[in-house]
Length: 351
Image (cartoon, rainbow, N blue to C red; front, side, top):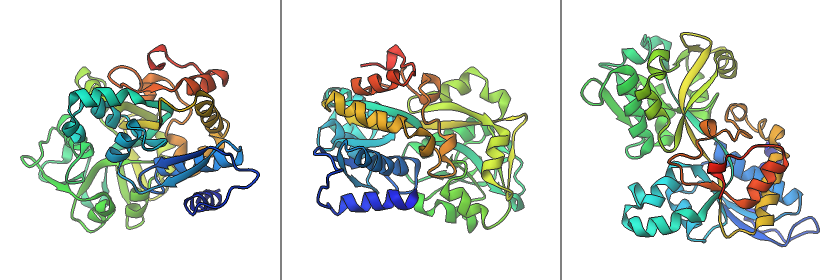
């Protein structure tokens, strides 16, 4: 399957001439890093659309989410994917979109509509067993990897460490920040004692780090997790409280890992998002693209070991991060596809 996905993506990027199996509709798509949930999903859609004669999708990966989300809203690209926090900030003209201003952001934001949601990653805490770290409450005086030098991930990490670990960045512990492509190395070479960053079960970063020694991953403490203050943090725009059976998390991580929780449930904070299109997309086209995704869900979950834990096919707003402060609604064509498949689309997520 991986070979097929790679071949489909490279072929489209090289602009191969259309064949009888190729549709006449040409679309452009942007995504972030290859091998991630968003990268695999974007590449898979290229294949699904090609196989069904829905559209020719020219995909560019390795792109910057803040840029391509705005480009989608402006009608400069047809399909993108990423976290819900970006449309949220765009709609408010805030964060990386502050230069647009609130008025322009409010105008552009509603142009972004959803085909299907999923979980992008889950914030967790992990370290080599040799470091002797006992959990979230054992971070004072440590070097904690919080994420990249700038961005929402680092802000979220520090907030989680403060609430669940009682430790404040640069007061109680040394906050380590590196670019994402250096994150695994920072843990392996000891630049950081422990990482409090997004993971997948198992994702590329944790797999690389785990290959260098026995490691432990810690669930968010249950008592704090269930408090009103914690639920407010965990369910803020762009994230949701995340749970998975502890046995499933342990099995996915492998023998070199110990996954720790007080009970049989692993708890974390999930980053939620999905695949987006401009609201001007033809209703039938959005329907066909969504239908192709739905009818490939089971094989889609097998694209990588972590894909089965990322809630593909789950439309529950509490799991998918829909409604509430999230301004993104489903495209009408997507609503039709999901309801035709027997799924319930919450009224608050309909356009």
